[in-house]
Image (cartoon, rainbow, N blue to C red; front, top):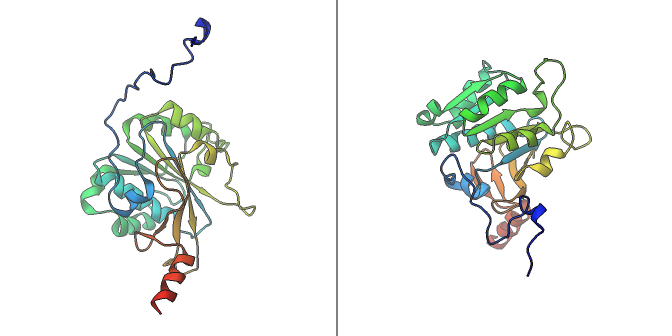
Length: 238
């Protein structure tokens, strides 16, 4: 069977002859514990993870757990605490609660909100956690960045994993438009069940690297069953 025309030879590769990607770093080590099961085998190539949810759902607390998990595997993590501020007491509280002492030397915090500094830092970190992306500004300090900038970042820095937080608006969509949800490999929704925080959970609505639909309790740090399944299990025991 004939191949593609010569003028297309630089665009297409036969599926059995795709050139191997030249990775700058090692393959990504799977995260440990239930958080590792929740994420699956993440690929270190143009990877973006979105975390969305309402205020008070636990997005920031979940982000700290993610930072700890990557640091546990010896990855260097940049935490952009734009929402809280780097000197906020909440940073200290979350550090004490969610990040193991031995992992803290691999996690660095800033509240700088400019896109040019995110680009400046990206090649020097394995993971960039941005809380929140809707607070990032262009270099002139005026306009907030368009949500499409996430796609540009993951393509410009393919070896860096971007974990970006978004807050939902009154229309139940993320601020700035839904483009990041299509571009990201993993979409996570953090659900606020009640005001106790104890029952809030994260759920993968899309996961190209693992199982979609898994639920992870932020307070318990474990994968949990959906409420309907929990109720059925409880009824059987009774």
